[in-house]
Image (tube, rainbow, N blue to C red; front, side, top):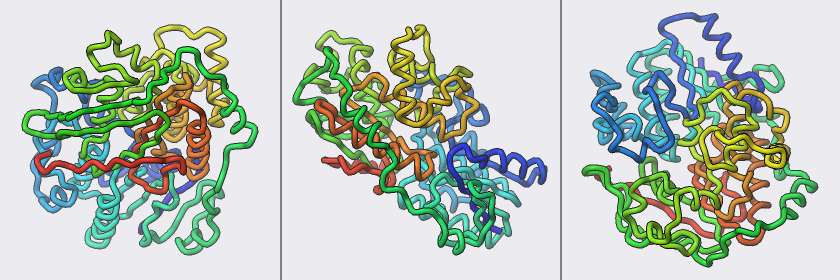
Length: 433
């Protein structure tokens, strides 16, 4: 039996799965949650820049090969293109590579019941289709009961037999669910909120450079692996870029150079806001002050049990966690953006107790809270339901209508791109990576 479990963010999908796991209570049940987090089951401590600071990796850091153990199913490795990363450290995997690793490791245990929570997020279109085909093959050959927990109802594979809709608490055959499913909303942001964003006052300390980003002949290598090779890229003020490419092509690495999270950024010919990196005397924090950022790496770094409001407020200080207490004016600014994203009621709740979708909305509010000149959104709609995806797109489109606002957005779903996109950059994965 193949079942899809769908519903709005915080509709109870995870709680239903936990009840199912308790009811089955078998060592042949396997559950994987794809929530942009390595988690203690994969590796120990993680900090935001560790992926880029490979000189910090010690001898005890496991590789993919070590974590997989004896590999008997070569077809899985070939299907997910993991053979070339067997000797990579787990913490250096890209977001998409990490999901492939988790899937292969779980499938090697030959489960009878398999629960996958958002298995398609972070995967490029080709790999998503390969995964759909593989899951059907596994169910048919091994007679596995498969449960797919999906935030995006349009991710439901065509071979799913029944759909549990947590919003209506009904279980329907797939064709019946598709007939009655609500259409994707065309607009969610209210006109009042749209005007409020457009009427935000401009900051007195803004950068107004024509060239927001300029990279000249930028190359990044880790050992023998080439991630970026001789890249030339210029982003002008007011442009909105869509950044795409296969998993492992270097999209997140490129953004880490812009945000100064990658130590190799200071060895590259990079200028930000008209200032040459490493020559203008500006610190990392001077740079980050003008950038709003959300990414899978950031999501997995937030593992502290603190209130959601403090997570948003950390965007004002460019820290993971909050080490300076915000004043009342700063708190109100955080609440204002939480109202825009429809999550004001979450302000005092623990971040770790929120659903994955609610966490992502909190981190999005964090990216917008300082009204940045450069907005960098790396897979911003991960784990969001249809309504919240439309809401975030509305906010992005409205925000980018304002003067002196530039954006770079990464997504593997073409339909997730807002209408305001003006330019596109596709990164090709190098064969030796």
